[in-house]
Length: 282
Image (cartoon, rainbow, N blue to C red):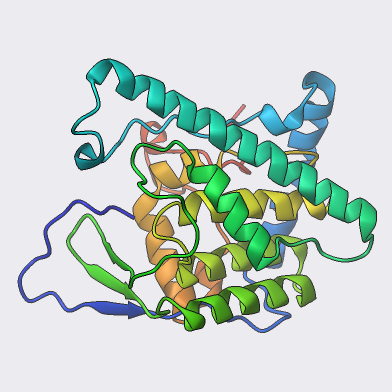
């Protein structure tokens, strides 16, 4: 979500409530789920034939957008180095998350792995470490959260900091380990729930998308971190945010991506951004 546009006069602040789906909610239509699973199987087969380490197939995006106020006293020659260091720390955090997921599968077969609230905070700290755009050590946010879209619409996250936030993170964890939703849907809904709880001051999207990949890994749908979800969201930011708001309002069917293929009918080929689970045209 973009944080740099002025708010138009008279624009009402919209409240975003956390996504709280029933344990058996399905967010992806069956036909699209089957198509996505088949695409993942094809991708996994290619990874098995060509990659020594599938976790490094899609490394985190090299984030060049930084908040100037946090770097005002940093010489220009050092900024690029700090951004590169942050990208490497994110890659390390992804490797650790994937390894932790595999270890939990081995220790507790038959149970859906999920990061505990404490482990979630620790992972987030690793993800944002050295990021010049995120001051502070990470961890749960200590203030109210507001998000401004590029058109100036302001959204206020309903979950307040403190005990209420900690309770929602705990409920997110309990839902994640108990859900009976199909694996694809569970990954998408867990991601939406974490995004709408908005537990951190920054880095919520990066953390939630990494955990979604770990969910697919845990379900056996892919062997490693194969999806460029960050890249897809970067190219489809408005569609992603609108679908997230719809999920917060209980319209599950509009969520489910970026973990499902999107059909691009009646659009020029030059404007098509292929989804990470969509087979490119041959």
